[in-house]
Length: 185
Image (cartoon, rainbow, N blue to C red; front, top):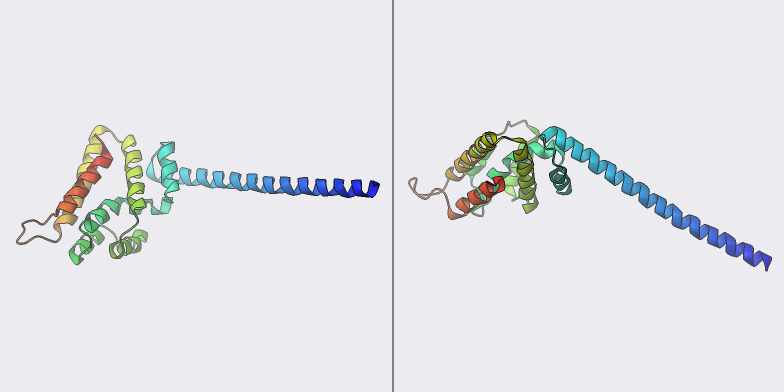
């Protein structure tokens, strides 16, 4: 009987040790995940100037890294180019003209002009703009929005239409409204 009790106690102890080992491993993994999240948020805050924790969390959730943040500025132009369903050569050249050919984002943007990026990219851009606008004065925000919309109109006007009439499609106009809405009032 004593041997059975000892075996039972050993088995109980092994089960408890195994349980707590798994629990400890899970807690360590959770801590590592939180540390990585914090590091990503800090990196994004340093690069973007955004201080709002919720917006930084949203960018991290959307898998935006500090090194890809600069590509976000091109997203509205990509969205305008794809608004009517495809990107033509004139739109492609117009967008790529905003980038240095040897810049890190050039290849990424060139790929987005071949294959439409996921909608999550627009969500990431919108979160970025909302955070950035919190850092800007009313006049700075208005100037930033005007500059972006001017570039978007440039892309929409790059092709289409007949003899300069109807160059901007209904879909592109709808995209302009969507872009403007991100800036709020």
